[in-house]
Image (cartoon, rainbow, N blue to C red; front, side, top):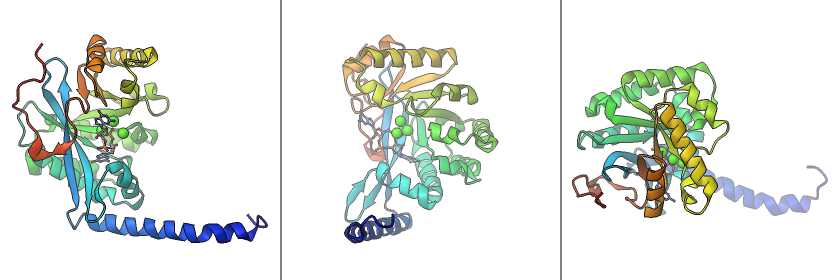
Length: 275
Ligand code: C2E
Ligand code: CA
Ligand code: CA
Ligand code: CA
């Protein structure tokens, strides 16, 4: 504001300029990344806690930057959303992931993350239908993961798109459950196939009884609503034991495997732990 002392402005301006220049440069490189084929998809198994075999594999995008190396999605997805790049990028991810998923055994599903912005693009349903048709992946083997941010746009358009997607035969999964606001009301909005319990609750599962209570309650609630649950961020066998005890049937985390390139996935190996 005026009169706050011009010294302050002189001090901050160059830094802000530099930040802005870096931001512009980043956006420019990100736009170029798609035609330059710098994006790659890594895949992480979601394990059935009854058989300890992968039942679903989640596609997680990365940016192979020529100088900065592998950039995680948290660093560029928000920028891609702001600039609209998420629309062509999201379509590329759907196509590439479905193409890969179609080569997996029949019982293994593919999970793809969708951004709220893709729901406003107007052609998400066509993009999904197209990716399925081109790849030959059956719709029933595709899970689309959305977060509460998609449902926050409480217009009828979003719900209509969700119903259209479900009409294709794909599964809709509610991701990062418990991290947003008024989560429970969202469960009534749409018939989700599955709820993914955010890793923040799983992390302290063995040390905090309140986290165990939350995971247990969400699992029971999901069951009552005829939905499944997947625990995210599972890193220890102790967590697996507790998850199984409360009836959670699927788990994803570094204990079972980090996200890896498609070639490194293995479906045929024996279960890690015999029952
Ligand atoms: P998310 O959908 O919740 O994905 C799970 C994240 O948890 C992934 O991070 C995964 O690598 C990480 N993770 C898996 N197991 C463990 C574990 O045991 N411990 C810990 N600490 N972390 C674990 P990643 O790959 O960095 O992705 C971050 C987020 O970026 C995703 O969160 C998702 O919101 C977004 N994202 C990733 N790929 C896509 C995409 O293709 N499209 C869109 N729209 N968003 C994406
Ligand atoms: Ca996800
Ligand atoms: Ca998640
Ligand atoms: Ca997340």
